Length: 380
Image (cartoon, rainbow, N blue to C red; front, top):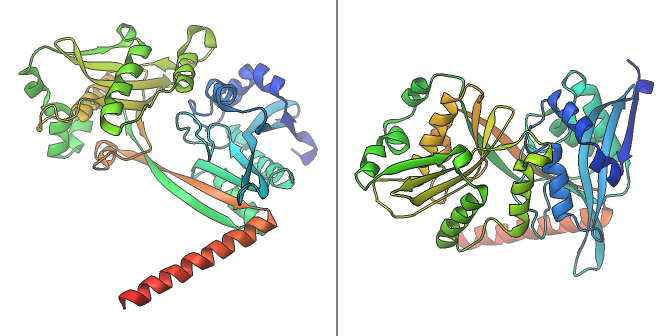
């Protein structure tokens, strides 16, 4: 194996559109996330949210002896600072936009690399990204902190003297559904078991309880119910038209995608109390959104109770190996931590290459430090 065996080049929009089969073969041979890095998620996100006048595809593809072995699915956004005085080209991974919204949150982002060539191809893709002068700053969100590529990005930034900023970190929690269900329940604390499973009897005292799932559930109905609950609770709409279109495209029979909708409704006497949108791919359930009636009964947490049903279904399905709650905390507590067994840290970083931006950020840091010192002095 020599350097001459490898080639890295940019894909065109047409190659992206036509590249589903090659993309999915590569993804299957990689350690990359099978939902958020799938061709269906990436391509549909791009066609729904990319703006032709503001964003340019920047998708690096690596080949080994003519075979696709790596993809860095990026794009460049045209934006500006200082009241449009400083135009900036910002690098992102497809699936995220730092400004002006960008759909449902895409997690576990990063390159897709054939697992047996992960080290060498990751280096090639990192170098290809950093050698190209077309971007001024990079905002790369929800990268898996433990991944090889995450470390390489930081190494390349230091090597090129580009400042790095950590913009935030999140923890994704999940359940290993391969073990016995009883074993999972035994590991939970008493109060957690009560909220997940024990309150079913109390809910049944109100009437006929039914979990509607599988083919009996229409994904549009689920999104409508979640929106209704979220509007009451958060005064916001989760499923905008574009987000609805993304979900429908992902689970469409004609999409060529392996992604399945495994959503469910928790109903009492036919009335929906809780709605859950889940997607299943490659044996993993992703809990995309959950909405429920608040203040139904102070002893019953309807959202947690609904999750208990979904987790039990996952354990009872031999084709499922894990249930992922994804990132994000609850409104009042980090409830996912109590339900989960496994966790993974996602980190969002900024790499600054433009020299004017470097000066601006250093000046901003100086102002913050000065303000903090003054605040400390006042309280001393």
